[in-house]
Length: 199
Image (cartoon, rainbow, N blue to C red; front, side):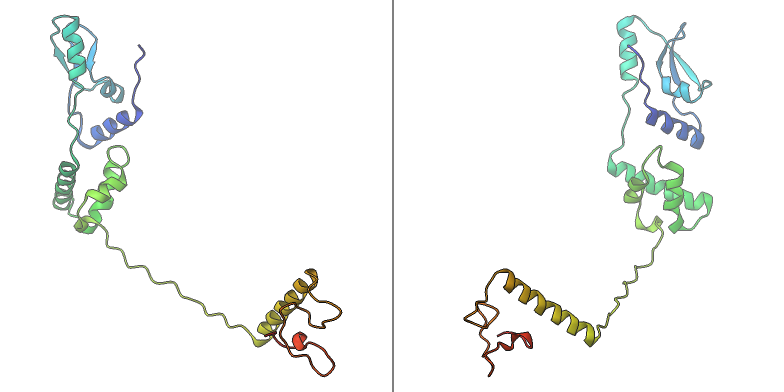
């Protein structure tokens, strides 16, 4: 079976080595070049420290390989606790203001170890940059000239008349342009609708 390497895991190991140096030694079978645990660590650094392990038989070898890769994943609560302790230590060691810690910690651990978003979620507010509240957007008031309003009214009247003509709602017997027009006809038997609104 071909060995598949996890690029994300390798990147995290490389970042961890840069920050604190090699932690867990590579586990190699005693009297052999076979790596039982730590192939990714060897990819990061061929000189990663090694430790030899006595292997009794093939079953023992396979159990060592399997169980040496069982690692502790911290719970959210534990990770939050640890990140906040690191933040506290950063202010003491690096002598930086509290509100700059989150940004510096994100640059230190992100994206290889933990995402920036996760770090920001788990750190206490004390360590985060204070941001100014957003200013409300200015609302522009647009004034409309009376001429423009009159044009709009005329356009609506023309549309109303055109709709009536399209629907063939006026007849030769009734001079009203709309079926439901209730305008009083003038002395010339004309509907005043063309001049005013129809009621």
